[in-house]
Image (cartoon, rainbow, N blue to C red; front, top):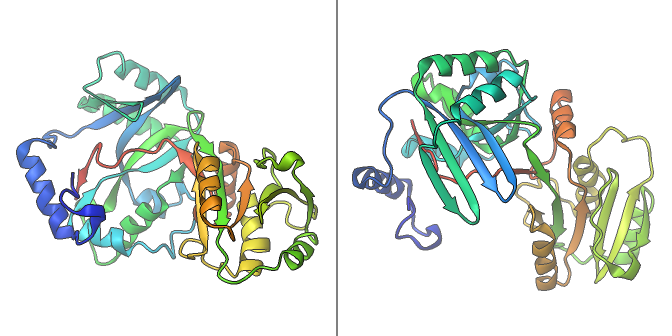
Length: 349
């Protein structure tokens, strides 16, 4: 509704969004909390329930190394988000931060949830529930429990974090600019789905030459009955080219510690397709989530020259280990759920 009246955002400016926001606040589509609070947020999809804390985070926690990341935010193209923060003064979606399970936090969330949820929304077969916590004693207790954690891990929202840090650093700022909206979810509730790659080559690819190069570092075998290859083990990849599926298994040991997304970028996408900046290269289409294979097959049907690479889904403990070690993954390497809908809670700057 913030984008109301503009087809596919054509002609939409930050001034229009700000005007719409003021209108929605005036008409009651949004209302503003008058007292300090945090929220307990719960997502229910089928039998899956994910419950966490929605609050704000001091950016100093990132500066001091308490927030571990797995994608670089130094060279993030965040100018659009920075302008949005500056001109609209709004955060519409939080960082997704995860942490090792903590009994005290879990018990306190259960205690809060004994009351009826203050707000319940249902959309796309998903329930969204919000409990508003005004009690300062409870808020302080939760803050204390989180402060005792050694680290938290940024599961999703690297561009948003980059924009917030860059915006704060543009000139000396105080108050709200030093904080960012965040949703904290225990890692045992986090879900990571497959995230594949489709390449639409800018130049003609000679399949014989491509296979000769690939077989230097991978064993490559045809898929039986030409079934889609969706790997479940690390170091295995699916390859689709010219209507045929293949299984690729990395056979060297020199890059054994690198995650699969880094291997694919360093050995295949960079050298063979000249994809140096995967976040902006028009040849590359990342495809992830529960419908990833269906979406991938649709793209392949639309683009006969397309080449697909499928990867095994990363485990949560692998992602946290990567972040601890300071390994930087290529952008769009992980599809992390929950995907929090924009605008459920807005934070005004």
